[in-house]
Image: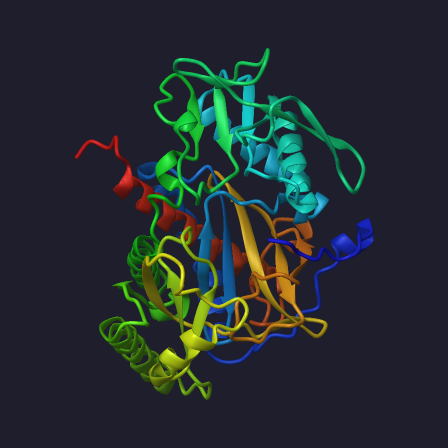
Length: 442
């Protein structure tokens, strides 16, 4: 995806907290207060969870703050925006990388990063350079090995901000992957393999492949992820004494529904209407004066991109025919979809709609940024061409939570909440991968 990056920032600007215009009244303040009051119990709960479950190697979670609820709307297990993080996060990212590698292979020395094919997007290449830098500082020899058929020899690519990246063609042995004169013990995928798993990555038994292949979209399903998240949200809500709905975007699996066919259109309308009814009920319970909406997404995210925003189930047929830019394409090969409660974003940076994205490595929050889009509305996806990014260090020493501060008055407290929601989504991804592990023993 092509994106617009904001002009480079000074170190002083990087230390500044972006000015947020957020709905700071109602349940979100109560939720913030409850989270801060429960911080020791929350951190202990996470510790115990990580004793039983393995965190995903790295992840990024898109979060929406509606002012009355705070919920994740997407969890990426192959994050590619490391270049958008503030330099202040580097020490923490390096420490997290060390912890992640030590847990898997303490004697690890050589790491091979496999990127997306056709990596000519300069911003994505800057992301690879940042990843290479992080793992190099964590004590690894790092090479970028491409499985793109077009990369037939070592290729040097100049980066727009200075420096260069070397892409080397991957060589496959009987049971190992590597590049010329470099034999890695660990392979890090930075591609979600949405086009399918190439044979060159299969049946590797003598090296660590991170994340595992079943974390990629040919296997992964959003419906399973949000089912796991709902289970975790209920337990977490009980832990701190809040309604799980305040942190959970309700969702349901619709299956394969082709709106060009009467039965498929009726299935979509039925699922959308049922979800809108549930959302209206919660809005009434909390006295929320917003118009509910739902979003229809591809379940596997690999077959089709975009979302379809629906406020009235009767409009689905017309919306599918109109197909505005950025909406779900039902004309491509049919795949399954989910219907999810739409979550507004009431945050702004200047005049642009904004949403926080939390970046994690192993079980640690290492930073994040605001995705902003001046051309999108509060009920639209911001992950679209024209997006910009404002770095934010979630764990800077000056941004630690401030217990006792009036709810809504402390940006660090809000950032701590983002980190909690991000870790809940990452935990859900861990549950999800355990359930789909082809080598799991039951």
